[in-house]
Length: 100
Image (tube, helix red, strand yellow):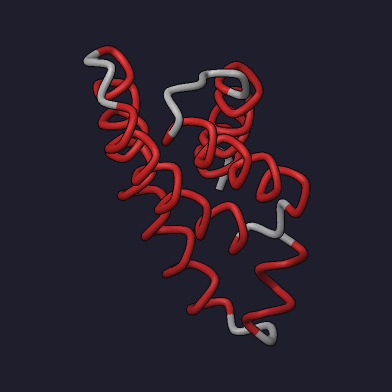
């Protein structure tokens, strides 16, 4: 929340709108991401990681953002090396938005 407060300049309405958008979009994106992985459609899964990467950045998760970059690149090469770690990031993001 500290990063969101920083970029909002303390504007609570902006903060709430930002979190609301993430709450609506993120679960849908995760569902699509998982579907693409099940279908072995790694290009579309990588596209979803790219999209989620911006939400990771917005939430101020610097190390998770770096991981998302690696995961996106590897997915485009059909490599799932970072999947488990990225799944943990997604879970923590869901936990965060559900608590706000």
